[in-house]
Length: 184
Image (tube, rainbow, N blue to C red; front, side, top):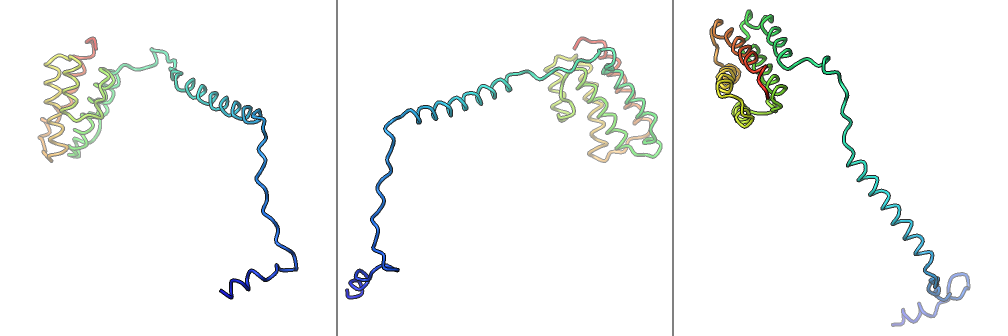
């Protein structure tokens, strides 16, 4: 207890007396500054929300293209199939690349022709989407057969004969030939 008394009895450093605490801040009685600042902040938030909603609701600009410049889906498919046929994959025995490119070209054609995301779907998913799009059964069956054969070469390491492999491109051309004039 004597230590506490000694601490209280000592004077401050430099001989100054202790100062009293500061009084509480005075709050202005007028609410006008608060009202004005609140209105400005609320108006700023409202402008931001309005701007965001206007930007979000605007449709994306549609690029204007001349329809004559855009090649048709079957024309693109024919070009790709001709390029595959002219390639050296069959000559070098690269059956996997050959079949992969045929399946890819056919999937691109189906995607462009029927607006089915064929490149993103499995073979089963693609065939189901073709059924939902009400494509005629013979075309779906031929597509199923072609893609199944291509999948066997790509994933099951099946090595077809050269004559069997060359019929794949003929099957792909047949599908393009038969479906190019159908109404999607």
